[in-house]
Amino acid sequence: MIGFKEIRRMDRCMLKLFRFTAILKHRYSDFIVHEVRLDGSVVKLDNLQEPERHVPDKEAAWKCLKEMLSEETVAQLHRILVVSEIESLRLPTEGDKQRRKSIHDALKAFPVSTETATNGDGSKSIVLFRKKARSDDQSGSVNRKRRRNTDFPKGAYTSFVLYKENTDTNEAISRLSGMLRTSPKHFFFAGTKDKRAVTSQEMRIKGFGPSRLAALNKGLRSGQMALGNFSTAQLSEPLLLGQLSGNQFTILLRGIDEATTPETISQAVNSMKKAGFINYFGLQRFGGGRNPTHKVGIQLLAGNIRKAVEMILEPLDPSLGDPNSSINPKRAETNKALADYLAGNISASDAVEKIPQWMNVERTILSSYAQKGAEKDHRRAFGALPYTLRMMYMHAVQSYFWNTMATARAKGGRLDFAEEGDLVYEDRDGVETNAEATEQDDRPARSVRKVTAEEAGSNGVPIGDVVLPLIGEKVDAPGGPVGAAVKELVERLNIDLSKPIDKGLGFRAYGSYRRLIGSPKDVKYEIVRHETDDEEILLTDRREMSGERQGGGVGEKCALKIQFSLESAEYATMCLRELTKQESTALMQKTVLKRSSIE
Image (cartoon, rainbow, N blue to C red; front, side, top):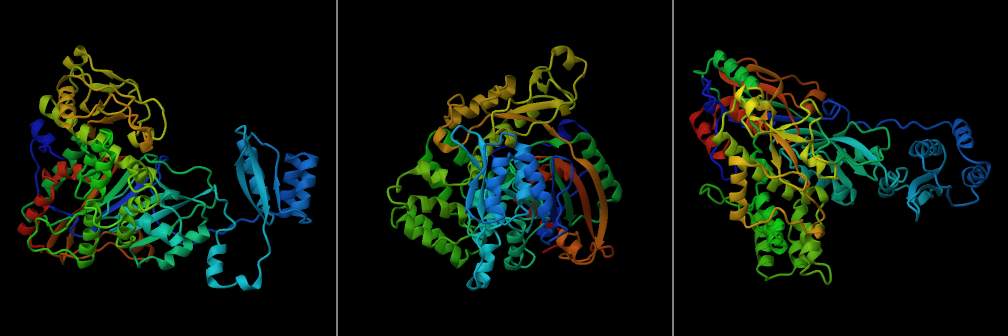
């Protein structure tokens, strides 16, 4: 992990090592991720069509409105719904949320748009606007596209599945927001997904209906992204970070040596299923830029907002450290623009013109600096980023501290049962809290207690029950070797965890707890024979929709297909490291690649 020597649980437990080497992500399509909702259903793309809209019967809808509203209100409704005498109408205050929804549903039968307005006293009212007849000159394709969204309330949300290949989540949102000419802040998701992978996840967008979203598929690059499985209902709430059960992974490990027997693989899988893995946050948690996200977060915690923003803008040369690689000319031009801005050679407005559209983070920050009077307003520039992105830096700091604690606990104690002083949940069978979800509000973290000497002496608490804190306002720093490791890190970084976070940053860190040991569920595997190194084997959602079948089946080359599910914020790379007893670093992958026949 970041700055830590990797520790293998199996070595610590002194169990027999069933070790084998394999290549992860030789192709990005060797790594498939399906999000798992809170209800346990797996998010999958299997329908690209816009759902048929149900148009309520006017007679039944009018009868429903007459039953729910007073005679005076019904008379006013008659003026806008039937005889079209007035352009808008504000209905009386309606405190019951379900009744408001029923009124909204009934009004869909009529040529009006609706929205829920908040009154001065905090109560809610429904406002109606009569839709104007469209003129003949509005029949052009551009106007048709703009009209597609007129039937969808600005305050409502549409749920859909985002399918992407080899694309970062934030990059995908940036592209979609550009096509819709709206802010990335209107997109909501439960968690980011790997870039070098094929992923399917639920998204919600505010103010746009299924018809507008379905139309985007024509403009998306072939196969790289797709939108589908649109919700038929207008949702009233966004999707928040952490509102997922976990992820289902389907992974192909190539380059398995012929000396690795099926028995070795079977023993390795069964051992991993039984023992689990140290639940480290993976390297992708800390970003791939010049400055890892946790280092930016540490500057924010220290109050150095200007330094944090400059670190975000600092350009990365992808060719650094690789003498055989050269930087793309367009990327070189972008890097020069960022470097020139940081050096004070060009203005923010000049710099933003040279930054490509897909670099949404840098463009957002520079656009904020380019505003009149905001040239040095660093807090405003950082605050211009979407909330989920701002929280990413805080989550990275929490992850960095947690990895430090996990290493200290693994080095200093046994890893089969809990030791005295370890933290466990008071309600062992309670609902697992998610750190990212609890950052959205001030809900109390799940209660924990310390393991007693008697429990530890009798091996009464399994290691799977042990939790470590994610630093925040709701949790206390642990004691013992784990607490000492946190104290040393705090002193080295020169930050004060007891000091409140600058409110101007727009986020807080409440904290939560995370299990020390991750446990994969629903594990399935099979050995796949194939002929060529680059053969497409795994079945993605798009390939399945096209009627294709899984590749491979014959050939001299050997690969392992494995499928399992992990809880939210658990990392498949950490699970695979335990499976293969192979380090997860990029250097190790390159070493294995050279040893194998794959070039």
